[in-house]
Amino acid sequence: MAELKRNTPNLLSLFRICAAFAFPAIPYEWRIPVIALAALSEFLDGFLARRWHAVTSLGQLLDPIADKLFILSTVGVLIHEHQVTVLQFILLAARDIVVAIGSASVVWETRREAVPHLKPRWSGKIATTFQFALLFILFTDYSFKEPFLSLTIVLSVVSAIDYLYAVLHRRFDPVDVDQRPIDRYG
Image (cartoon, rainbow, N blue to C red; front, side, top):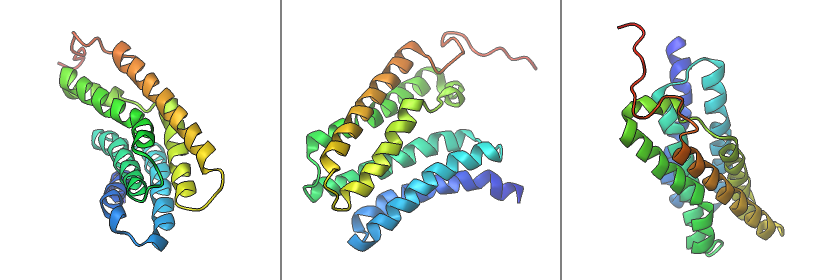
C-alpha cells in the first residue's frame, strides 16, 4: 500500500502526459471528459503527494511537464481548428516557455540540487487553473470565451513575468548558487 501511495501522484502526472499525446486523435465527444480527467489529475497529484508525504524529485519534474504538455496539446488542436490564433497561443504559452527555460537553466547551472527548491508559485497555480477552465470554455460554445481568453492570457503573461523574476533573482532557491549545500552528515 505504501508503494501505491508513493507512486500514485506520479502515475497521475503520467496520465496527463499520455492524454496530451493522445488528445489530437481523441473524438470530439470525448474531449470534455478527457479535459475534466486531466484537470482532476492535476489537482489530485499535488494534493495526494503532499497528503501522503509522497513528494519526489521525479514528481516535481513530471507534474509541470504534464501540465504544459496537456495545455500545449489541447491549444494546438484549437489552433488547428481555428479557435485560437497563433499569437493567442504564444501569449497563453508564455508562462510555460519561461518556466521550461528557467527550470532548465537552473538545473543546468546547479545540477539537481535546485530541483527540490523549484516550487510552484501562486501565479502559476492561478494561471494553470484558468488555463484548464479556458479549455472547457473553448471546447464548448459559450459566448464569454473571448473575455475569458483575454483574462487567461493576462494571467499567463503575469505568471511568466513572476517566474522570470524568481529565476533571475533565485527567489526559489535558498542555497547560494556558487556554494554547495553543507553536508551535515559527512
